[in-house]
Image 1 (tube, rainbow, N blue to C red):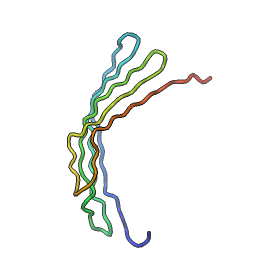
Image 2: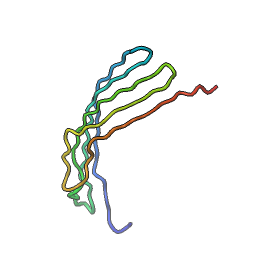
Image 3: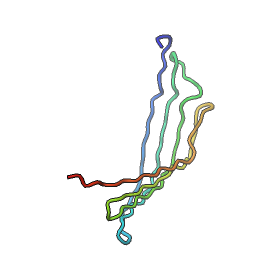
Image 4: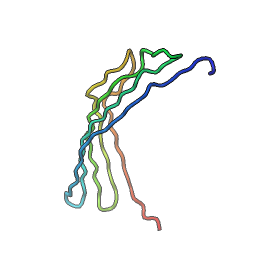
Length: 108
């Protein structure tokens, strides 16, 4: 707005996980477990840190992927917060559930 400067704080994200793959019947299962860490520094306005920004989060991410022989895949994972240490008063995520479907089309 040309009247003041606003800078978002630096952010670091990292994921560490384990996954496996095995066959049951005609389907392939890929279970996984991971930890997702996120750190966000305070935003700044005119060089002054804003108190209700930034924080640290740690999530546990269990998940599973199931693939059928017909090239159809169903994916399910969740993110469960273990640590949510935010600066000041702000919203923070609680449990998140992600569902996905994948269909491979044979285009020739």
